[in-house]
Structures are given as C-alpha cells and as structure tokens.
Length: 425
Image (cartoon, rainbow, N blue to C red; front, side, top):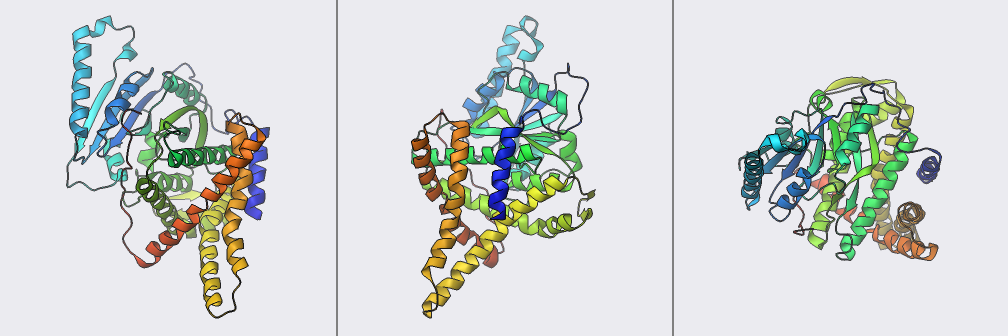
C-alpha cells in the first residue's frame, strides 16, 4: 500500500513538473559547442538487421563516430559490417571530401571482431568497444536500434550543453508493435517502463538505464570501471554502479530510439527470465548497501567510497528495491506456505488468489495513466486494454517462481542470448 501511494505521488509530479527542464544538474556555459558522440553498437549474430541499422546511423546529423563490435558472431554479421564500412569509405573517396556539403557528412567508422574464445556476454563486448571510443559521450545502441529523427544527436547535444549529465536514458519505442500480440504487449511494457522512468525523473528519483538508448559520459564510464562482465543485465548493474558512485541518470522522452520488441514465445521467455534474474541478482549484490544508504549518510563500496547524494534518490531506490525484490520474494514464500497448509486442510485458497491478483490490481490504474499520457484513445478502450495488459503482467509472477528457483538452487547465472529479429524492420 505504501508503494501504491508512492506511485500515485509520482504520477502527480509528472503533471506538476516539466520533465525536460526540471533536472538539477550543473549548467555548462558553452552552449554553442556541438558535442562529439561515439555510437557503440554490439552485434552477436545480427545479420538480419545490422546493415539496416548502420544505414540509418550514417544518415544522422552531428559530430559522431561509429564503433561496431562483432561479438563472436557465427553468421555473416562480421562480413556485412566489413563490406558496409568498405563501401561507405569508397563512396567518399570517389566523391572527394572537398565536395562535401559539410565536414559532418563523413563519419569515422571502426569495427572490432572479437575472437571466438573471448569472454562471452554483452558487458564484455561493451568494455572492448569503449576502449575504441573517443567521443565525450558514448551512445549504446543494440543492433536493431536506430533514431528516426536525423537531428536526434543535434538535439541531444543541445541538452548535454545545457545540463552536462553523467548519463541519460532515452525513451525506447517499438518498431514492430503490430506484428503480433506478443510484440504489441511487449510494446505496452516499453510504454509502462517509460512512464515510470518519467515519473521517477520528475520526482528526482533513481532513473535506470535500459540497454539501448543509453548515453553515458566516457569519463564517468572510466571512473566507475566500465561494465561488470559477470552481470547478465549490463544496464541494471551499471545503473546501480552509477547510483552508488553518486552519479545522476536522467530520462529524456525525446529524441527517442526505436528497437524491435520480441515476437516469439521462446525469445519472450528468455528475455524476461534474464531481466528478472539479472535484476534480482543485482539487488542481492547491493542489498546491504541499499539498506546502509537508508540508515546512514555515508557508506563504502568495493570500487569507491561515496556519500549520501539525495534523500529522494535513496527513497526511490529503496522503494523499488522493496517492490521488485522483497515483496515478490515474500509473496512467493507465502503462496508456497499456503499451498502447504492446504495439503493439511488448514489453508485458504482466497489468500493465494489475493496475493496473485494484487499485482494486476496495482498495474491496472497505472495502465490507465500511461495509456492516457501516450495515446489518443477513448476511456472505454483504455479500460479494456488496461484489463488485458494487467492480466498479462501476471506472467511476471509466474516467471519469477522459476527465477527464484534458479537463484536459490543453481550457482551458475543464465547466459545472454540475442532474441529473434525481423529483418528489414
């Protein structure tokens, strides 16, 4: 109930505060400077989408370089990237750089082919790519992600010049929401997450990174030691790492970045299982530090001593720690306890139903909020979609049962697996 009340407080803050101008960050006076970005794309067996992604990237305006990491791909990803870069450079050599309309027309492109015996995982791939980056900010994109707005980096540069943030998470939008029911429901999950991020941002809470569309200052990445190569959720672990290093992440709704949402059951299950497992392992790893930050003004972590930065951020992080870890954990224990009592004729099925239904009961009003905020639809349609979506979100509780089983009884973490892609989308 406390968390439920906190959610509605966050939604009120959205209405009260202009999300894009309320960040309490130090201003940079050199507003006329066009910032240099490094666009980092990691690709593992992404032959169906990588060429399309690179074509969209080179069309962007602004000052940036492109770094592609071919992460041990067994398909044609590496060859497609090599051929694209070769053809791109040949085009400008043929045209002559002196005939370019702007020096920004030509983009420096680098490719790194990771050996098959390299450490697996996206985090290791990102760390290798970071070593090739020279831009002030590194923009991490998945192999299927792209900006639809050609001026996206110009707008991002203007924002960076004004606020000089440590890290930014851009809003993600599905490029294939109408492919089937799974992709549409996954698209609604993206909308829910963006709405929650916007609410936490308006409150001054602990915004989190989300895999693609992450914009992180290169000096900050170096300071915190890069990504944790043992983590299966690079974004969530980095969010915690930045939080405990007194770094601020902000959320921007524009420019947004497109990505494909999963559309088959196998990819859907594997992706959500990895997200939940990585999130829970992250909370287990940092649980003591989270509690210490709520009880004291100073704490130490393995990679740096930090001080309490913000009561709001601490409160926000702590409440989401409770809602995403402690509450599900004890809810699942309570369900098994009640099932055990039912065997001996002392349990109550209504208690189990109450625990299970509490999740969609919380999601339903939240769905009404974000559907109203993001879509132009009538009230009846919003209610119907919210009902369907709330029931669908109950699947997270079902997946969590298996995640807790794995964490409690298996030492080895899951591996990072690329989801199935739609070519040409």
